[in-house]
Amino acid sequence: MDTDLLEKAETLLLKRSQDNSFREDIKRLQQGKQLEGSSKLKRLDVVLEEDLLRLKGRIDAIQVVTRDYKRPIMLDSKDKTTQLIIEEFHCRFNHGNHVTVMNEIRLGLSKETTETLRRRRTRELAERVTAMKRRARDAERWHALKRLKSEEKPQTEPCED
Image 1 (spheres, rainbow, N blue to C red):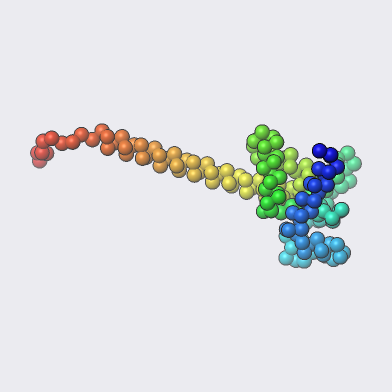
Image 2 (cartoon, rainbow, N blue to C red):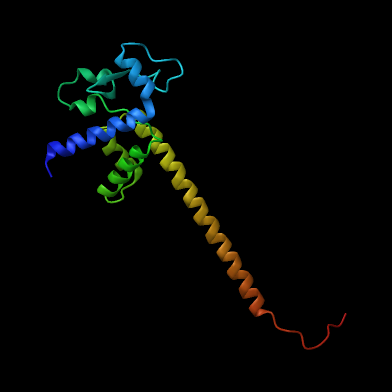
């Protein structure tokens, strides 16, 4: 496939994701207005570049890093596109731990997005481990009960008190 075509497709997906999550914020920024107080982006320094919301910061002064690193793209951590990006990076890096995956994603996405995703992923993994331990404990108890029942011998003589 043509590299330019892939980049355009990626940009289109990112714009669509942002439009789904930050439609009102994008409209206000396009009109040159301030973000509303209720906006998720209010406390962040965001800018609209080429119709993509990007995060500004002090790193803008550095000349040797890419624009995607200087001004990462803002995505909503709850959006399906963001989840698919995470899954793609997770597979690309051979199912590496969440720190590796998040560091690679952070090169192009905002730290705010990746930190939220990292916390959610850590919580999900902890819940899975807890559930697995619970199932193992329940299975162990079930097998122990089964062994006890099979070891019981039927009484042939009445008990003497």
